[in-house]
Image (tube, rainbow, N blue to C red):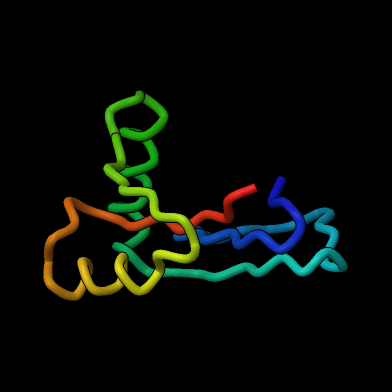
Length: 84
């Protein structure tokens, strides 16, 4: 379940039977490949063969993360998080 204020990013068709839209969640779609390509990616992920490389940055370092991304200095993805 997507937490309050969270974002769900999907690359395949979704059908919601029930989703609490009153908690500030965001749903975004993205097109990464054709349907057959996405099925293959999901098969690989289900088999544990997809590993995402991320670098985590506290929210107050968002500018730094964006700069590194623009300079091509990140291995893959930047993930921003709130410190508690």
